[in-house]
Image 1 (cartoon, rainbow, N blue to C red):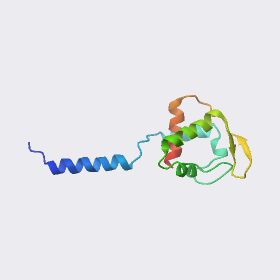
Image 2: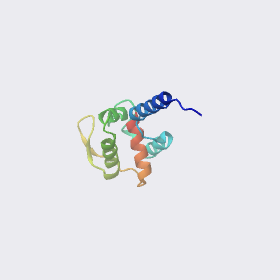
Image 3: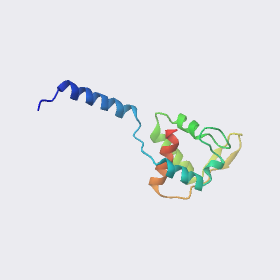
Image 4: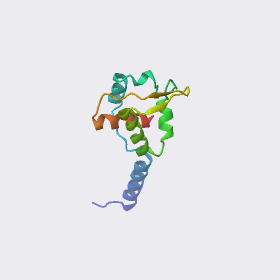
Length: 115
């Protein structure tokens, strides 16, 4: 069996481009939404519109190309109850999410950053 070197090289190049251009952030969207709903996150946030807190899409844009930083910031906000500035300029303690499971926290952050 003869392997065409050009085809293998082309295939490898295409695969490399795909891997570099696609974020390697696998997540379970349904589980992320369920966790957010269970914790009343949608009371202050929406996917694409500003409420008391920023839209999730706005958060994703803020961390575009800095996903590791974004994941850390999101997880910190949802686990440590820092004071956050709301869209109306007031401040409030961010709610702590009801899970300590690192996989669930990372999944929620990955979903938010994917928007």
